[in-house]
Length: 118
Image (cartoon, rainbow, N blue to C red; front, side):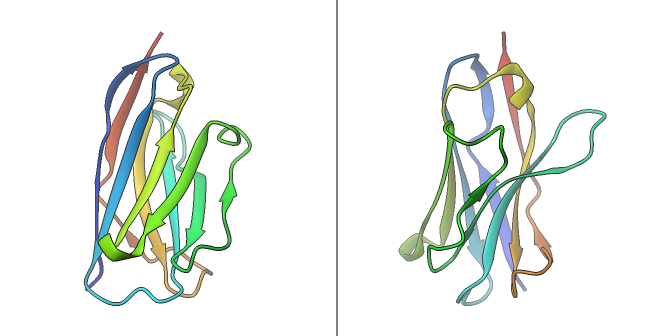
C-alpha cells in the first residue's frame, strides 16, 4: 500500500519561502510520476509541478515557473517542493500524489496547509 505523507506547510509572509516534503513508502517507486497539487478555498484542485522518480519529466504550472522547484531524493524516498517569492494567491492545501504509469494519480497524501499573508 502506497503512503504519501506531506509536511513543511505553514504561515509565511508574502515574499517568503517554504519547502514542502513528501515522504513516500509502501513499495519501490521505479519510474512513478510524482506530482504536487494544491486546492484553495472554493476552488478546484490544480496541478503545480511534477517529476519522475528517475528525475525527468519536470513540469510546472505557469504560475509556479521561476518561483517553485520540484526535486527528489531517492535515498530518502522524498519529493520536495521549494517555494520562493510566495504570494497570497499561493495560499492553499498542497497535496503530494503518485502516478504509477504517469497517466493518472492514483495515490494522494493528506495535504499540508500553506498560508501566505500580505
